[in-house]
Image (cartoon, rainbow, N blue to C red; front, side, top):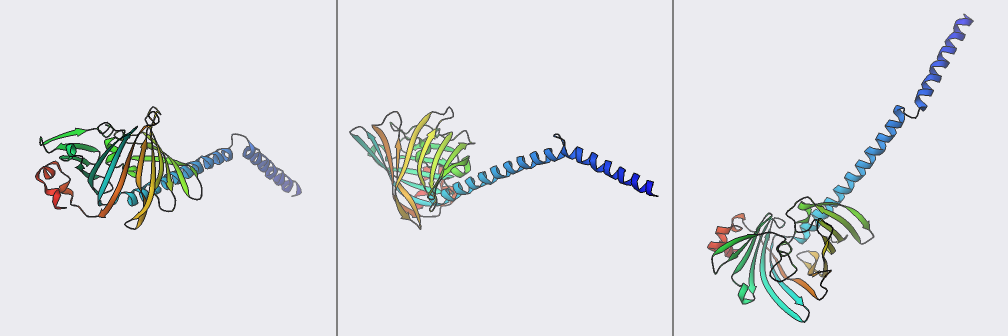
Length: 272
């Protein structure tokens, strides 16, 4: 009986020894599980970060891009020369629908610019002619792209990550997943309290620094604080820069059908 008990103890000891030896081997399932857990944690953290960025951009766009009628002035500065443009802008659905109508100077009074999603058309009332243009095309002799004038929808077209932050701001590194955007990469600084942009560095896909935008003169408009002055600087021509100023923002609701070539040609949009 004693011999049987001793043999049982010895067998149990051997089983435990073999099991502990397998458990401790470098290529064991435990090491794999640990590495798997580490990878899953990294993926989860990245997903949370991406979701956080998307939430920030969505909140920023909802505050900056209200459905409204805006009165805007654009100043084009070239050394001592200053040219001023004034226009009305009708905006709907986070800039998915935009209609821009020039009020001055006189040579632009009969010009409209229409954007539907990513497509932009220029309408010349004098010739009754529509012409489609790319978002990246510069307006006249300025450094402002048509996509700038028509206001970017950041949250729908860019993904990215938070690369720096302090108590008051986030700095985001954003990359476009839409080839029709005028800028491939944006480094964007955003105010944490009111979710408005403070500064943007704009780059091409080849990493060329195209321009810098500074957002200043923050005011309360329709219940939220937002910048009313956008200054566009070129890193290559310091004496040439452009300023866009929001003079007024009136909340309005628009039917979809007025953002249409035929509706504009017929003047239906003028009822709103």
